[in-house]
Length: 254
Image (tube, rainbow, N blue to C red; front, side, top):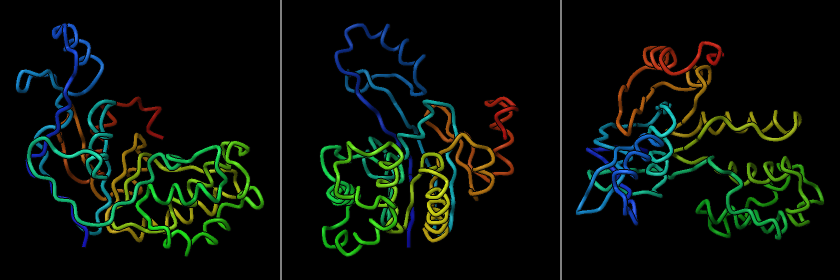
């Protein structure tokens, strides 16, 4: 069983060397969606505030909100990179992330070596990677390039490598920031097929996106974040029209 339950969750980030607090507060208020205040004599940005929700098996949840609303911070909390400053976050289930799929890939190492590096960053044991490495290599379509340094790869080849490793297992909770589009048309077709299979099989999907069409097609529930809080939580057909009417030009709805 997978579950995410937030009870009065908030997270603050301290601002160091805040010699001129009024100037810094004004700048941060303008540049971010967080709220600036003080905690124990320190200037802090409250990135998320008083979050209360529960996400259960079978739900496909879309995150929407303006830039700086807290979507990225919330995704990092789901992935256990950040921990709450206040409240309680209960996250049960294996986490998988398709955010920054090339993270950790070293251009000086071969594609084969980077499979182990990327796999380790995903929390996979060496034996788990070794058991799947032939399947991963075959999916990349890199041929003999798999034993060449990644610095010799095109950007598309690097994306194929990262995608092939990152999607070899289906997690219980899948985190995504926009829909992945990887490689040329030949690779893109099978990548789309694999991605769809993973999304169908995962117990919980969390997807942050600015696409009306994607959210309406994939999601069963929408969390609308605004200035670090949940403004609305409900069905896509109720929330998406309201959000895009006020935040996005009509030309961007397609």
